[in-house]
Amino acid sequence: MNERDLPPAERLKLVNERSVGHLPGLIGIVFTEMTPDVIRAELTIRPELLAPNGFLHAATVIALADTACGYGCRLLLPESAVGFTTIELKSNFLGTALAGTITCEATPVHTGRTTQVWDAEVRNAEGKRMALFRCTQAVLYGKGKEQGNG
Image (cartoon, rainbow, N blue to C red; front, top):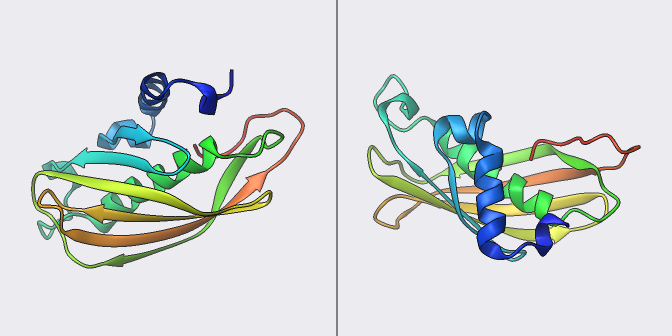
């Protein structure tokens, strides 16, 4: 059965289990919603995710946004695709957070046969937008070998 055909609760369980033992699980990303139209994830801030200056590390925010977009890309891959890879990403930081849970909402902009473009917004615990993110994914085709970063 294709991942996109699973009931929403089973899809979330599968995605969160897939993250264990990889960067998303290591830093604590938890997916809360996954549909073809929107991917929502969250991350609770802890000291290990801060930069030495005491502020949230930019890479933490990028990891949350890129992971949400990546799992969305995986969900919307064409049937004959074997994976994907990020070919470009951009972030604009509008604020930060020092504690609490940050959230991410990722949405598809373009879901073509060879590329996908995704946008994401990251918000702090008070709901204030703290980062804008856009990435482009190359859709990969091959001879049955699983590829991609999702």
